[in-house]
Image (cartoon, rainbow, N blue to C red; front, side):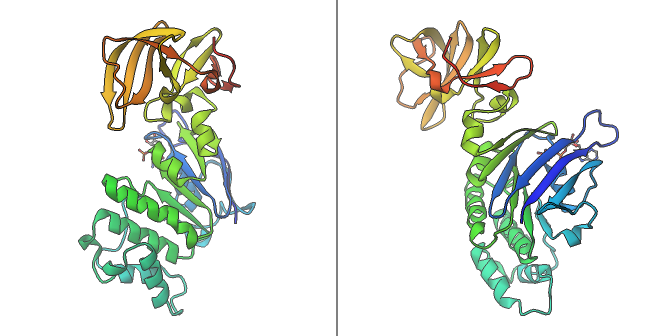
Length: 329
Ligand code: ATP
């Protein structure tokens, strides 16, 4: 089953800009589309429209090409898991999971147990949600969504309130979901690393518009627009004037070499553990360079830089759209 949106537009009254501006996306069976974007980009609004909780002003939501835009939420069979899980607090986890099963007459004990095992919440089945950790509750919410037999699954920042180790374990659970759930998954996050590890495809949503969509590594390496180049990455892509256009190169692709074509002075060094980011003042502005933690360059040092041609990207100054990478200037 393919889930798609066609030119979805949502404008909230009192807002000058549309929360969603002609958003067209498609997620195939067995594919996970990660949607990444800054706060306020329209991510939650998009999921709410797809689930049927909010009506778009124009555009369409389709399953295998057929419009479901006029169906009420429960008939769409699209499960939405929020960043704040919404388990019933007065029920045990087991009761919460059972409650989700559509056809209650069916023998459901085995399904509840096997889904709980798959999401590593089986030992908590008889507890109330408030006695679970945030990660356990989030996994129970995902189990509950799966038990409702959805055609598609929408996950809205499921890791948002979790600490780093829990984030990793729930993220692995989401990646592992593929063995149990074959439908399309939309996974919303504002964390690009999470988006790249979870998504088969990656869409970047900024101010209600899809700026880029495609294979995650391609979107990272060769962003379609300046906005994406600035948004994706631990540090944004370095951008500088290059004649009529704007050139860009990622910090990890700039090399420190003895006889670099570009020279500069290190003005800052920020260690991150395995690596360090150097800020180097050059004639082209301050460039951020990722180096190994053992690299000895320190603030005040003069260094030579090389910007390897295969990693240079060029963008049109007026439109911000990428041209094909060309030779370095
Ligand atoms: P975050 O990452 O912070 O959750 P988001 O990308 O999910 O953000 P949305 O919650 O979809 O963003 O909001 C998109 C825009 O629409 C924001 O400017 C928000 O203020 C506005 N908005 C969202 N819901 C409503 C509403 N019910 N009424 C009015 N404006 C709204």
